[in-house]
Image 1 (spheres, rainbow, N blue to C red):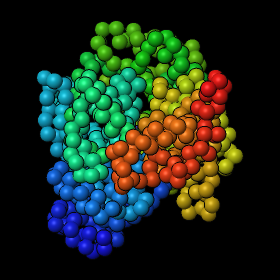
Image 2 (image 1 turned 120 degrees about the vertical axis):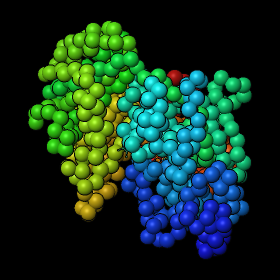
Image 3 (image 1 turned 90 degrees about the horizontal axis):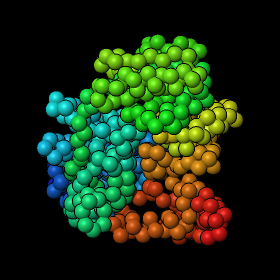
Image 4 (image 1 turned 60 degrees about the vertical axis):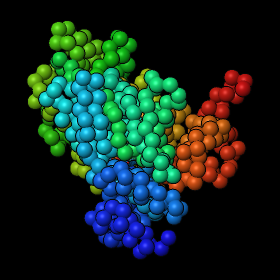
Length: 481
Ligand SMILES: Cc1cc2nc3c(=O)[nH]c(=O)nc-3n(C[C@H](O)[C@H](O)[C@H](O)COP(=O)(O)OP(=O)(O)OC[C@H]3O[C@@H](n4cnc5c(N)ncnc54)[C@H](O)[C@@H]3O)c2cc1C
């Protein structure tokens, strides 16, 4: 369909105010938090589900790609319109439609900002547990598409544990409701959470509300090295304690955070561990003392316990704004997201440092240590010739190291565009083919968020080649399959 005609049709469906087609304004939608970029042909900002249905039907009729978009904070290129087409930005569908405290659930539109739901429910003693560090900006629709995690997902579980049912617009324009895993039939909610906008567009969600804990303590342990801090993480879990959150920042990150927020980290600190515990007030101080002893036994130089709400908030602010503080070190960063078994953290972090040296790049680490969910942050200056290639190669090496120690490609940011070529590192051709069949049953013409998740060779039908290199294939061969 010719572009001007398309714009006219979309204006009829959502009004002139809901269509972005000016090249200058479209530039705002060509990127997300990753380093890839591509301009959509046009962006629409619907306010009602009926408009979403009409736009998707128009796209299907014209054979145009549809790329859903929330706040654009994604870190794997998921919202990039690689083939142009219509980007549907859900940020104006941002109403909390129902707060049902009796059933501990809320009905929200996809554009609701994550933190806004917790702020709205706090006065009644509730919160929405999945808390990505980007929670002041990211949307619940984006969280559902990425199956997002966050510091408190160690104890409370990631997004999929908090989504009860979804209203979804399918690529042919049909509108359906899915139900939870306790209902008969296939668990379509489970299939859609984490599907990165490739199976359907979420237009409403029933999500779980969690009761706020009676009491909270936050411990800040300072170590001489990430190796000691990582040992403390394993020792805490081995003692049978599952904190609400357990986050680590390395020396480079602590330096940037201290410069930005003055939280009192000494210049020679090697790593800090932030441990939050919650529950009944009775017994919580004993638990804090036990964690303190474990940290000290693993080499902590000091352990501070924050009880007062403002002191806890200051420590969390420093952690959640750590990515922003990186701006003090370099104009650009490329943030990775891999997972390794907790006991492999010391080895993996040492290899990440070596990779940084090999490619002459500084790499900072700030991550969800309790889950073994690493976030190596490769710092660089985009203006330096050839640097992007070095950054990308370092990223591939980091992923390989994590897979080699028994880890995986993504803990929470999704595969998107960024890691799709690495999928054969962990999946066989048959695994990918099964996933591709599922995708085709929802999205037969590959119009919803094309070029995401699957390696390009899958769409070219070269599945057999993938088999040889995958870790799973090696394991299967080892066990005689
Ligand atoms: C500073 C910073 C810190 C972060 N910390 C964390 C963290 O702790 N944990 C974590 O998990 N992530 C984190 N992220 C990554 C990011 O914030 C999450 O992936 C978030 O869920 C993306 O939400 P969004 O609204 O920005 O979605 P977008 O980036 O706009 O889109 C993400 C994906 O969701 C799809 N999508 C969006 N809305 C819908 C919808 N309604 N229906 C179907 N598909 C849709 C898009 O097509 C895309 O594939 C962080 C990012 C930044 C920049």
